[in-house]
Image (cartoon, rainbow, N blue to C red; front, side, top):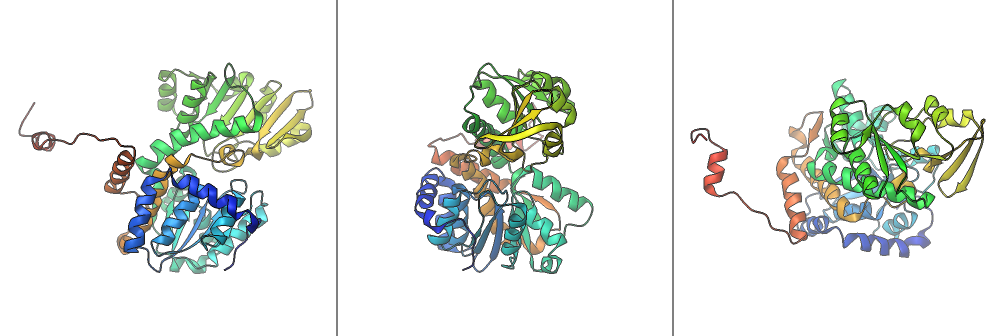
Length: 418
């Protein structure tokens, strides 16, 4: 079995971590038990480009239990948990190509190594497998029956491809499932982003001004959690509807150049390019901390910051100090990459339980329905979404009401009136 991980000697610690996460992933565990009996993925070859974490490991175990042959590579150079990668190889015999801190060259070598596996299904977090297949490995596209996409940034890229008519196989947008983005993006990103910032810096959030750029589900989560810890939250937005929502949620809203002047901590969650740029660096006060929780490390213009600075040095793990020519210091966390995964452990297992349940069931659906799906970005069916929510509630010991026959009839007819 081919693989490339840091050290197989780390496998023992990785297995403990995988088992610890599994206890908080009851929905995925139920799916794995069914998959072991039914083998709905039997013989399918699946390549996954995801964050290599303990939660992802349990998804890989589930896909393998369903009969799939799986290979895993990292979707971010800094998010890999090396002990988990080692355990997947040694204990679960799943090929992994991922090393925390790998350079860009190695990162793409690992993506190509996963594609050398000649998969029929791709599973992405950021659309890198799809992108490489449509550029450097076009000869393999005909072998692909479909794929899934985990994150907002990837869905945006894929929808753009579909609109331009260049997407060559169907993709199920797992990110857009309600049991994914309402919970993973909001509660997972909210908690894990602050976890990453605090682990890297050991700062107190209470009383600080924390700026959030982007008030989508991830931004809502970061703002909510930061406010709950006593931070004075400022939101930067370009969408007037989201800006109004932020105001009514109790946050100050202002242009980014104004926010730059008062920010103690600035977090970007937009998926866009150079959200924090030269003008913002010029306006920032001494000691400002900047971090990104969007998928790619493009939201902060690091090249411009380096050019403007007199010197650059690491002062703590995942904290770099840029000394500006006027004596101000700006601190960049985790090289502008996903701070929640680079400096912490990513989302808690209990929220990834629903996200990865969607991934597993989407893979099953893709195999069943591939011939009927258009070369487009497709939503997760409502019945799958609701079944995952039902299983999650059941695992929490929570019951909910059901409509009476009379109520159902009333909601589905017009004759009864008001």
